[in-house]
Image (tube, rainbow, N blue to C red; front, top):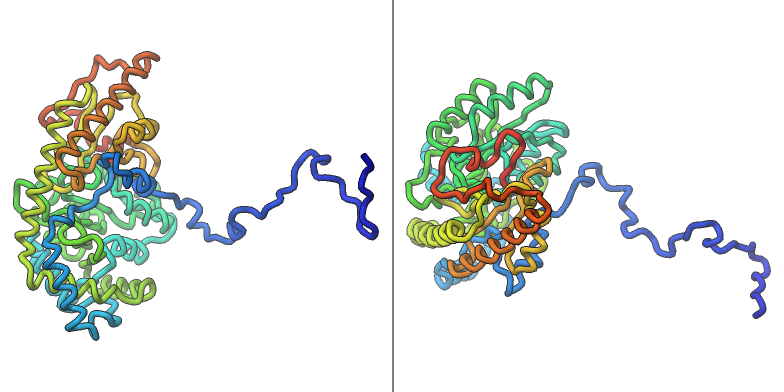
Length: 466
C-alpha cells in the first residue's frame, strides 16, 4: 500500500505515538479548574448526599437519612392555610421582605424558645434564616478567618463540618459519652489550644438528642460548660433542632437560657413542622445580630417571605404543641422498634447509644470492622446507613455508623436491622477466617452503662457520626 504524502505547504508532523505518549484529543474535563478559590479544593460530597441515589430505591430499607415524618402533619389544613395566604395576602407573601425576617414570625419564635427556658429573648435579637444551616454558615462567616480553630463534639453534625471546611477553619473534636460533651475534655482542649497558640473562635455543640450521637447533655454538665466558657472567654454556638422532641421528659433548659451574651442559639422548624419550608433562626446579642443581617443581605438579600408567613400562620392558627406531641409519640415508637431489634439481632461486640429523643442511634461495630468498607455489602443486602467517617473532620470514625429511625415504619425498621445484622455477622465471619478479630471477647450491649463500650467519642479519636 502506498503511503500518503504530506500536504503541500504544511510541515510534516510525527504521529504522537512515536514520542512515547499520546496527546489528549479532548479538552480536560474542567477547563476552569485552575481558577477556583483555594477554599474549594477540600469540598467533597457528604456521606449522606452520596447515599441519595441508593436510598430512593424501593427495595432498600434506609436507616440513613434524617427525614422527618411530614405525612403525620394535617396536610389538608396546612395546604388550605398556605393557599389562603397567597389568595388573601399575596401582595405581602410574594414580595421581598426584611433581611432580618418577618416581625410577627420573630415574635412567635420567642414563644417557641420560651419552652426551653429562654424567657428573656427579644424579637429584635432574632434573625430568620433559610434553615438553621444558613444560620450556622452566617455565624461562621462572621466569626471565623482561615486557620481559626472551632471546637466541636466528636462526632459532629456533618453539615456543620462542611460549613467549617468552607470557611477554612480547623476543627478540633472534643469527646462525648452517654451524658454528652465531657466538660473536662473541653477544658483540656482549650488549655492545649492556648499552649499551641491556636485561635479558638467558638464551641459548636448539639446538646439535645445529638446528631449523630443520640445522646443528651446532662443537666450538671450544662452548667459546667457554661462556667468553662466564662472562665476561658469562649463563645458557644448552641444548635438545637431536636430540643422539643424528647420522648420521656419536658424540654431541657437551653444553654442560652443560662448565658445571654456568651451563647448564640440556632433553631429550626424543620423537625417540628416542615423541612421543605426551610425556616430557621439565630438568636444573638444585638451587635452580632446586626452583622448577621448584613451577611444575610449579601448572601440571599432576604429570607423567603411566603415560607415565613406560612410558619407564622401555622403557629398562630394550628395546634402546633399537640402536633409536636404527636411527632414525639411516632418517633418514640420507631426508636423502640430500633432498640428492640438491635437488642435481639446484633452480634456480640456491637454496642449502641439509647436515645431518649431525636432521630438517631450511634452504633459501634465489633473491633476490626469498618463501616465504610462494609457499606457496599450492606447496600447489596438492601439496607442503608451512614458511615461514621462522615462525622469527623479528620476522617476517623470508621468503626461507627449512624442509624436513623425517624422516617421508616416500625416494620421496615425491624427488617432493616435484620438485614444489617446479617451483614455484620458475615463481616465477622470473614475476619475470623483471617484471624483479624477475636469475636469471643465482645458482648452485646444491654441497658446503658458508663463503660468504655458506651463512650460515644472517646478521647483517643473515636468519633460519632452525624
